[in-house]
Amino acid sequence: MWFPECDNTTIKYVKHLFSNTPDFPLREVERVLKRFGFVRTAVRGSHFRYERNVDGEVITVPVVKGRKVKRWYVRNMIDQLQLEEWIEDCEGRQE
Picture 1 (cartoon, rainbow, N blue to C red):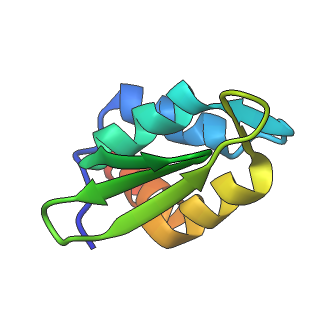
Picture 2 (cartoon, rainbow, N blue to C red; picture 1 turned 180 degrees about the horizontal axis):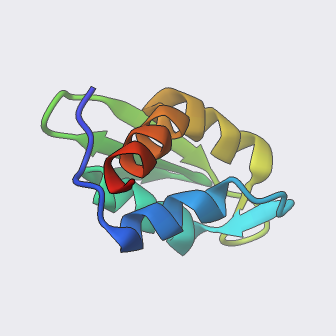
């Protein structure tokens, strides 16, 4: 699994995804995906597809109500990208 460097801005964006907000603006989710090396490769209806060239990993983000991503889909993305482990590693380095 490829991870970006641990900079404060990326840590802040990722930590926001752990909040209990019912849904997130697509641009906030895209911001994290871009920092992790993903680019949008396709849009089919309400599904946005992102791919990372480093390892070929693909994430599909379903969007509802215009430009919102439900918390459940964000949680799936957190698990798929192993963001909890990444945060723990970054916080361990900063100490």
